[in-house]
Length: 124
Image (cartoon, rainbow, N blue to C red):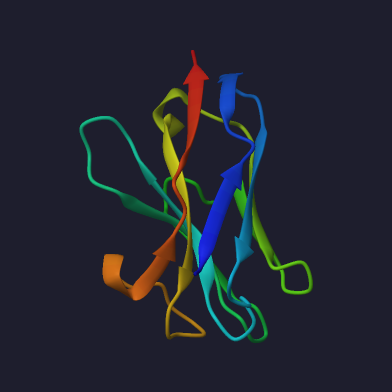
C-alpha cells in the first residue's frame, strides 16, 4: 500500500520560513512526477508546485513563485517544499502528491497518491 506522510508544518510569523517534507513508502517515486497542493479554509485544494522525474523541471503557482522551492530525493524516496517569505494567505493544509502514471504531470485527484496533509498557519 502506498503511503505518503507529511511533516514540518506549524505556526510561523509572516516573513518566516518553513520546510515541509514528505516520506513515501510502498512505491518508488522514480519515474513519477511529485509535488504539493494546499487547501485554505473554505476553498478547494489548489496546486502549489510540481517537479518532474527526468531532467527535473519544476513549475509553481503564480502566488508562490520566487518564494517556494520544491525538491525531490529519489534515493530517499522523499520530496520537500521550502517555503520562504511566508504570508498570511499561505495559511492552509498542505498535501504532498505522487503521480500514479505520469513522469511529468500531476493530474486530478484520481491521478495521484496523496498524503494526509499538514497544517501551516502564518500569523500576521
